[in-house]
Image (cartoon, rainbow, N blue to C red; front, side, top):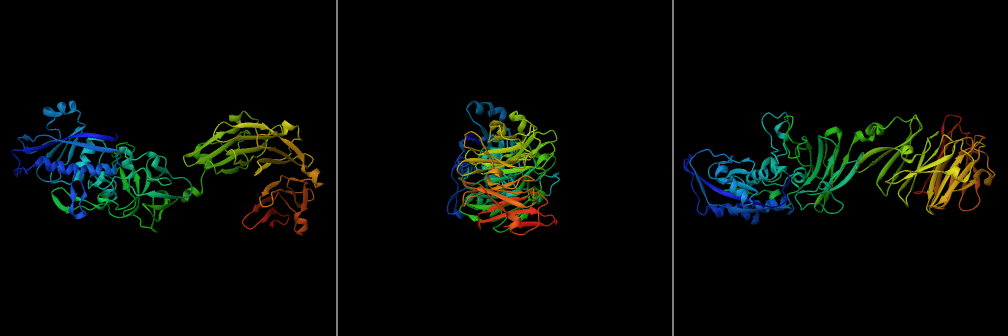
Amino acid sequence: MSWIGRKRVAFIPLYRTRAIPPDQIPPDWSNLILSRVLFDPDPQLSGADGSLRAWVRAASSGRADIDPVILPMQTIDRQDVLPDALESDMGGRLRDQGFDHAAIVMLGDIFAGSNRGFWSRFVMAEHTGVWAMEIIHGIAGFRDLYYLPGYTDPSDRAIDRFDQMSHSALSHPTAYTKAALGWLDQSAIVRHSGPQTDYELQWIGLPQNPTSGRAAAVRIGDTHPYMMVEARKMNDQFETGVRRGFDRSKTPGIPGDGVIVYRVQTTDSNGGSQNNQLPVYLLTKKALAPGESAVVDDGALVTNTGLTVGGNTVRIEMPAQHVIDRSAAVGAPSAAGAPTSCVIPGLGVENIAFKDGAGNLHELWRDGRGNGTTNLTANAGAPKAAGDPFAYVDPTTNSVILLYRGGDNNVHSLYWSTGAVGHDNLTGSVNAPKAAGDPVGWWTPDNVHHVVYRSADGHLRELWWQGPGAVQHGDLTALAGATPAAGDPSVYFDPVRGTNIVAFRGTDGRIRSLYWSGGPVGQDDLSGTAQMPNAAGDPWAYFSQADDTHHVTYRATTGHVIELA
């Protein structure tokens, strides 16, 4: 359960007539209790308020509050008092009066803190953190996170002073506990994705949710157990440490500033232990200072990369994610051809497409929220593929355009963004010659789509359309008076000069190119001009804008890989 809003809590001083040693009732006991709850300045911290209410407001970022009512002192004729000792006399009446919780406040020695649902019990000598822990048990049902005998985990892996529910010292709870109590939105905890990602974390002791561009914590893993990464700082009186009850000595706050990593080992929404394990297992025994790293579960490397205003920057590297079985991860069918891939920057989506053994085209998508797969041809009701697909992106619509040669040897396209998949029969729409090889395509800044494919006569044909306009067709080989192609082309766009370039292997074995920019189509004999060996396979071509260079690589008849630049 959560603790949201103001909760009315009854505090009941309880005097034991048979206490050993005898209870010594302090003067003005009711006001001493009220001070602990409402305003308890710490002279060691320049008068900082160490009261229960100040902690609840700080830890919850103002989402929770307490409305204390100090009731008249009760008397009981026994030494040992259970938390619900007054239930039969007062429980029903207190509930009828709208109280959310009731707490017996006793005299005597420490280690008396306990809870039984609606009722809690603690003593004046105990730290206010014990009061907070028991009241949270009663109001929210959240369980203890500290080490208990019988746990199979080592005791030094308890989250300890990094979480109030483990040490009861009035330090801030972890992001895990705050989220469970409703004091932090789950959306403020980002899910890690990718082999390496940088994050900016806001200190958990600052008001939450974090400011724009930051996270309260990073979760690594979609299932239990999973890891959490968060940043801690002695930024207030609670993270620094406040005095304990009647004992004016200071109780330490968090063990240190920096980044911590812990493993959540329970599926219980209230933090209850499972399988005799610590609910929260501390992976970093001390907070990572800037520049320090830790290798944690699954070989993950977590690095505190620096200090920023109100937080830390963190880098998370997942070596295992550098090699990923993308098909197995989402239960996709096996591939029967070469995949194609693209990135949609506007959506933060990575996309891989491939053909299965039955000719269906599938996508494997991944973004910051997770990953998945779609049977594209089935979704669009499109013909099955006879060749391998080729993908490119239309940035004006954040759409993937997937080109392929169908079983009818027409060039088809599938297109989608975040919704249903559409389909076009490109060659069929303009009665263009059918394909003898796999098509390739690209988008240019004038919002024109270009598709090039090889027909049965070896000619390279272009299909193009602008925006939502109609498809048009042209014979590039004929327009340039070029040598026919013996294989499939490779294409790219030169943004410096606005030139479209198609590299291909000619029937004479030479690597050639076709190029145009709104005018006539030209041809170059690239390998012949460079006096390089003939090609034994199709080329791959690209443009490097950083140094304004063109690159064409191919496998020569000598077996060497040749680069033309």
